[in-house]
Amino acid sequence: MSDVRRVTTGAPWEETFGYSRAVELPNGLVLVSGCTSIVDGEIAGGGPYEQTVNAFNVAFTALEQLGLGRDDVVRTRMYITHARDVDDIGRAHKELFDAVRPAASMIIVAGLVDPSLVVEVEVEAFRGVSAA
Image 1 (cartoon, helix red, strand yellow):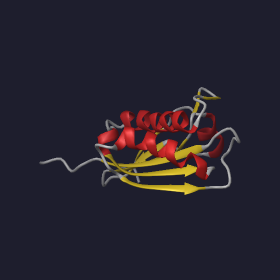
Image 2: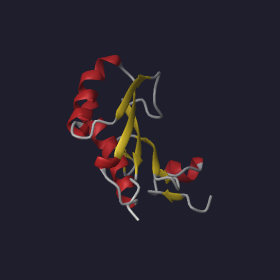
Image 3: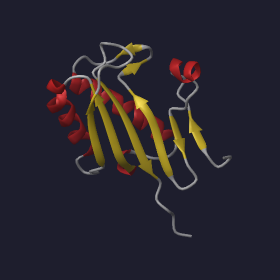
């Protein structure tokens, strides 16, 4: 699997739990691990909308390290802790991806690693096949 590229960001859980922020497969598929609104060890942004934007920005930063961006996103998953936050989280997703229109899922879960977090996102992107 030497053709697999991995991105790390230095987030403490990457080392502790043994994972990469993003992994690019030889076929051009890029998988971005779950991202939350934790920036520099602190929860950035208060409400569901702000946390969603911040979480996706963490994912975008990982994609940028691989030379990709929001327009390359083909799938998103949003894990949310409260049904009452659907509209705010959905609004953030629409603002970020309206022009891209990736496949998307929003799943209600029992909780996240910190009870102050209300959303965690995953992103999949695809590096198009370049013409030879």
